[in-house]
Length: 388
Figure 1 (tube, helix red, strand yellow):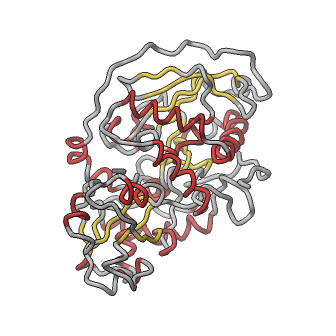
Figure 2: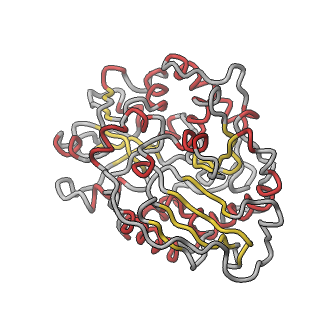
């Protein structure tokens, strides 16, 4: 099962370290230089590091497809470090003059936040950071988002339609006596209860990423998950359940962070500016290209899951379902101005307003006087690149 990449991962690190212990062995290191001649985009000339290192927030999965789309066929897997590296390619499959290294998150980094990784390892260029995490850590470890691969977060609440035939959304669950399980510490749940959408008395922070509680309750409880995975998994791969679930995106209930936004340390934004000017549009296009033709990258993702051997189970069918959901639900899509990957300052201001009192109560108050400009920039976005 997937653990959504939120601040809840901090609270559940010990439990998940026991259930998803990482293992595996190293393979040969990738060659020191990209193969092939540089194509139309020269990232080396733009000032990018010899190896652009991307720290993801979970095991390899289709939601990260755009990042892996930029990895050339010469990639080499390091099962020990749970990373893969090779030539960073452009949309034509040509070398950009630098290498790309993509590192797994979650169990591979001891369930630390990606922000913490950025601040503890200077070799990391970019990290997958949700904007609610960026707000929470803005006073001590500020980061700036430069690209939003996911327009809509796939985080959802799901329920059994046979048990709750009249429930059409999360607000309806709040009018029932259903227990709603989630990962303790998730900011979205504090929003749902604070807004009166769910009752404090019905939410349960004991969810551990497995289907055991949901199955044991026979459909009486509801549970968090990802709309791009769990609906298929529970219907087709959880034998003890084996039927469809209904769900609503937390996004549609009013809590709208940018999940897994591509971010840099704020103190490195200026020095990376030349690189990002060329790299961000390339990554925008990679998101679009992956969604249009995911076969090559999905095969790579499945290979990496097998090689990394962290306990994460990911099938071809789930990968394909994820791509369909990304398109059908608009998880990967365009903003209101028909551009893929840019961030909406008004949306982030709303998130600041929603989460500041939550994080202050939790003892991690955001930067005093924080504004969207402290968290994001669209400076490097190519407005002509869009999905569809």
